[in-house]
Amino acid sequence: MLRRTLAALGRSVALFVPVFLVATFVTFALRSLSGLSPAHFQLGESATPEAVGRIEHQWGLDRPFLAQYASWFHDLLTGHLGTSWFNGADISALLADGAIVSLSVAGFALVIGVVFGSGLGILAAVRRTTWVDRAITGVTTVLSVMPSFVVGILLVGVFAVGLRWFPSAGFVPADRGLGPWLAHITLPAIALSFDTIADLARQLRAGLVAAYRENYVTGAVVRGLSPRRVFFRHVLRNGIGPALAVLGLKFPNLLGGAVVTEAIFGMPGFGQFAAASAQRGDVPAVQGVLVVSIVLVVVFNLIVNVLLARVTPAAARGV
Image 1 (cartoon, one colour):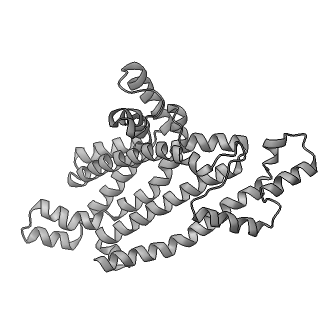
Image 2 (cartoon, rainbow, N blue to C red; image 1 turned 120 degrees about the vertical axis):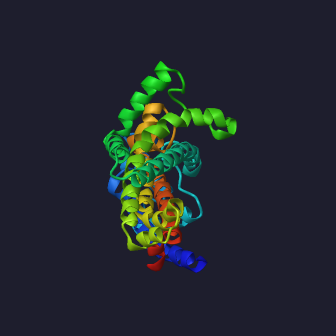
Image 3 (cartoon, one colour; image 1 turned 90 degrees about the vertical axis):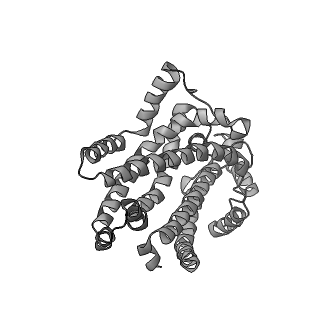
């Protein structure tokens, strides 16, 4: 099993390394395509060409494109994401604060999606073709078509403004108390989790129902194995693959959806920082957000691929 896991990890790394290289190259190329310059912040619109050239020389923007990319990528590998054109601050430090907020919300939304999506999917598969299955299918269909910003506004209106059970805006770090931290991230996490719950439940149900129809499950039932043992030993292991694959696609959606939910709940995360930086034309800051998002997505998909190889026999045989 360890050899299969390492083989799956190696194959995933071999796939994602070129993806990461291409993604970072495209991200860096945005600077040249944007036509923006730090001279815009320091000199204003009335700057002379000589003054603009002097500022760009200080920032190294007069060097060849590939030389700039090589220096930027080297700094990236050492954890330095550059300096903000807007205020000269270290972008890594700026993003660290936003990362705590966004990962708190997205991570909690993922937990909610996995718990409720798995529960609904398993229940629908076990009670397939019954009214329970049809009811869960209807609920997940409704959840899948509800935009997160609409859900967020409704949650604020009902649970924050009306019932006053949760704060309506802001963020409190976990080191200042687990209770306040959970109180501030619960509503935005719920708003983000609906789509994950719906897709995970549908995919898990489909995978488990397909596994129930396999001959080896029929044989296990004929041999007198208990329904619990049949489910956990045969059905779940062989039917969970599509649901795990969905999780790899949902994490980027959760990070992207945070842009809207953070605005609704007034949270200073990735989304707010990226939007403000883009409006100002602070290209290095936007690049930093993109790079960190790419790294998070790549790492999460690596984890999902390794889990697929360990949990599902079919995936392990394909390694």
